[in-house]
Structures are given as structure tokens and as C-alpha cells.
Length: 346
Image 1 (cartoon, one colour):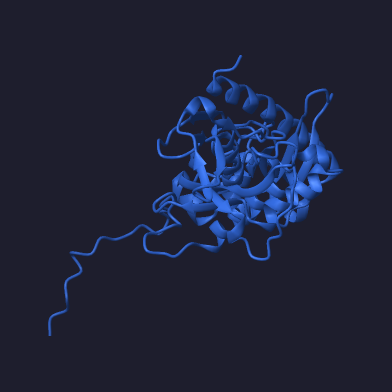
Image 2: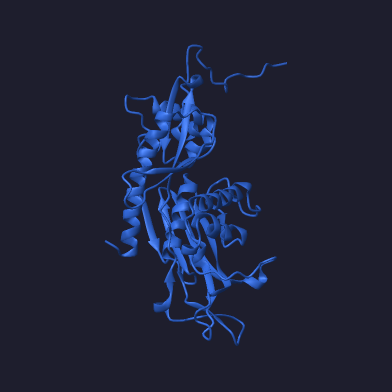
């Protein structure tokens, strides 16, 4: 029997070595930790894969009154993260509140602690209701047909928690009273509340999602206008004035501004970096988005740290937290300037 011919086989030299390499995008997918470490260790000045230094912040763009059928709205872009927020105001009659007891009250001046009694009414009666949704296609990890994720629900809870701890809105701005015209000397009777439903939709998720969502919410609340409302005795209900000139703005009792960051460490903590204004790629490697929230009131010389939320396994010391708070103060200055320009203020 004739042997099979080997003429079609191509011989491979024993000493040949075909080089094997991966493109940067493929390496980022296969070995993201090594990819990030290589960028940060490549030179004397660490450069992240997105081209920024660890302390460089992304610019913010803001548009107000983006939605026509809301009491206030905003659209914000922070790097590749885009968020739209709308505020809807609805009337809550005290008769619809379970176990509510009618009290004759006037304003916060009659209370010894405005941040206790009057803010307690907001949370007792759920007068501020933030809700965040991740739009289908905002990132590869959010595919169509999925129910609301636990991540979106946790973000909504974090936003509500910061709303509560910062005392951003006073309950006195959300109350609707009835003043008896026949008894002008009597104190007004509380008849209803304004309930603010704050809907936040993430259009594009590029990291620092909590910071972007909070800034969009604050901007929408700054833009929110409530109609002039009064109690009508004949109708036994609240009626609103359609004239916009009689409407009132929602007064914010501060301007808390968050700054997101992540801590990245390798080799058991021998090499460590703090990356400010983190993007989605960095947060996926480092275990989530950490936040420092600062605020500054008129007459105060410096910034106050209102809240620190830390996620991930890396250790961030007091010195690093101080540096992050300093950069958060710069973000506060930048944000308030953008907000004033959007509102048409000098």
C-alpha cells in the first residue's frame, strides 16, 4: 500500500517563535487590574487609561428646564455619564395621612429646632420621593427586559439618605395652610402638603453615577416652582393659581456637592493610588464608587464634610481623605458657578 504524501504539509522551523500580543482593549478585558496598574506605573506621573491624572476631574455640563411637563428638571453630563431628572409636585391632603392629628402651626420660627420637628414631617409623611432608573442600554451590563436592579434601588436609597441628613429642604416650604378670613387673629390651620416626586433617569453610565445623579437632582430642585396654593372652604380642597408670577421657588438650605473616588492598590498595598472622579472601568476593578460630600455656607471660611461613603477593600487614610475633601471643595466652586450661570445669575 502506498504511503500518504506529505507534500501538502508546511514544515514549521523548530527555531521559529511567533510573537503573541494583545490590543489595549483586549488586555483591558482579559486582565483589567494589570491593565490599570500598567498605566499608573508607566511613568513618574501616573496616567489613567482615560488619559487623566489621578486627581484630574471631568468637566460638568448642565441644562435646566429640559422637560416641559414637570415643576423642575435638569440634564447633566459628567464625562460619559448622562442623567436627566424631573420633579413632579403633587398635593397630599392631611385627611389622607393615617393617624394624622390637626395642629395649628405657623412657620419654623415657632419651633425650637427647625431641623428636628419640621424636617421630621418630611420623612414621616414621605414628602420627598427620589427614584432612580438605569435606562436600557446605558451600559453593557444593563440589558433589556431586566427588572429594576438592586444597584438602582441602593442608589435611590443613598440619595434619600443624603437628602435626609443634609436637611436640604424644609417642611415649611411644602405646607399649605388655611387662614379663616372671619378669624384673622387665629393661627392658620395646616390642610395639605406638597409631595415632590424626584425621578432620575440614567441615560449613559460612565462612572461617578451617584455624584451625577445627586447634582442633577439638586439642579432640578433649584429649578422647581410650586404654584400658589390655598384651601377652598366651599370645595373642601386645595386650588392652585395658574399665574406663574404667583408661584414660589423651593428654597434649598445648602448646596451639598459630592466627589466620587476609588482606591486602587496592588501587591498587598505596597503600591496605592486614589483616583478621583472615577469612571465605570475603574469602579468595576476597585469594588464600587466611594463618595465625599462637602458644603459651604455663606459666612463660613472653609468647607464642611457632610458625609463619607466608602466602598471596596482598599485602605484610604486620613491624609488622602483630606486631599479628596480639598478637591471636593474645588468641585463645589465649579458646580455652583455652573448652576448660577444656568439660572441666569451673576
